[in-house]
Image (cartoon, rainbow, N blue to C red; front, top):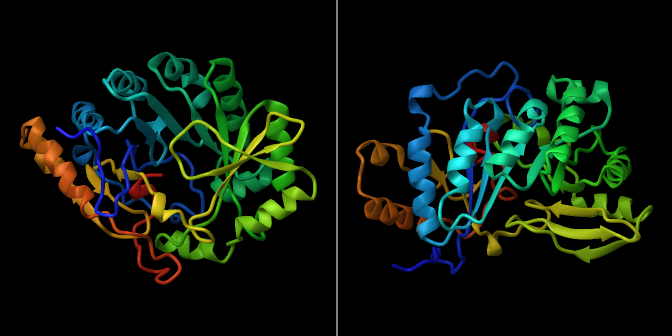
Length: 327
């Protein structure tokens, strides 16, 4: 069996983003509509056994990087058990997790013990009132979670900041300095037009070239790299350990090097954030098809992966919201 998974455009798929829930304990205005409650029913969630089967199949095809996402993955009961099971799969060499940090304080040690290495924590502001306005939550819980993660030995810890004009564009340097003081890394992300929330976020869009220019007024940025399989382009701040990444799906799309797919909580494989191509796996899993047939289904799914997204040409094309697709 070929141990690489390649799409019809010659891109090697080596990274899967695994959503374990579409639920979240925050309500970021650019991610989930206000009052939204149309969540997937638990009976339709992939079980831990089903998730383990899928990830094992991807591992057999050469996929080594798995990122656990949501929604907010820490609201899924038993997430540390699932993490332990996934980290034990032969071929999975990099298991990471994205979180909003709200529940991180209590569970960080268990995650580290379960095999989670790198974590990304969403933090769009350092200001208490602004955080509440963006997310509806309490920023103190995130700060406590970050300290717990660092004490537990999770590393590197990356902060994800969605850059938004008129919302947090006066804080880029402040957040960079905070990361420098705490020993965290920082990644800036452009807003994307996904669903009704994404359409609203477009009004706040800012190119990360503008963000980088603002940072260069204060810091010298030297091209660099960081461990991981994601699309960020990294720079190191001269004279410090701080590394800053820029994820630019709109201004400088990276579709020609896309190496990832997403598995939603209901078992749907999404091949692209900016397209509707998908392949449902749940029914196949519940029919208990043999593992070789599951692997062939995954190969068929990858054939659907499009060449590129069309966020710029068709900004209203993707109607599903980010929390449904998986972060």
